[in-house]
Length: 73
Image 1 (cartoon, rainbow, N blue to C red):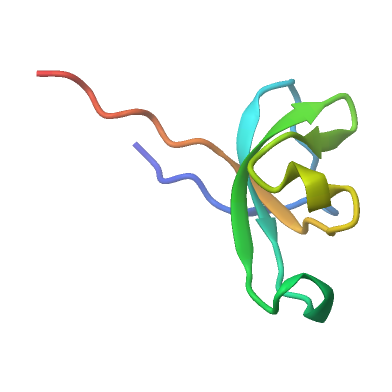
Image 2: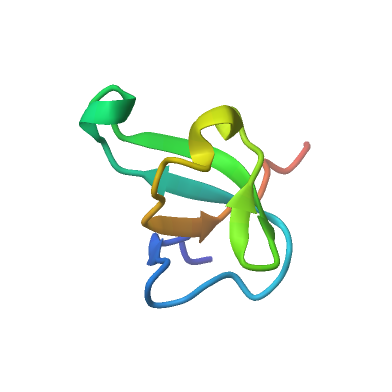
């Protein structure tokens, strides 16, 4: 099984509406720290997530599918 890889949003957008890991690079305006959040792809942009109140102003650059959850015993 291959590990998920970060995909630049400029190269490819998600093909279906679902939850994804989304990368927001550091910026002076939002605390100088990179942020990774779980957001929902809705038509043509990511929405929701823990930082949703700032997401409309923040620029995401990469995304990746969520990894498979752990298997039960």
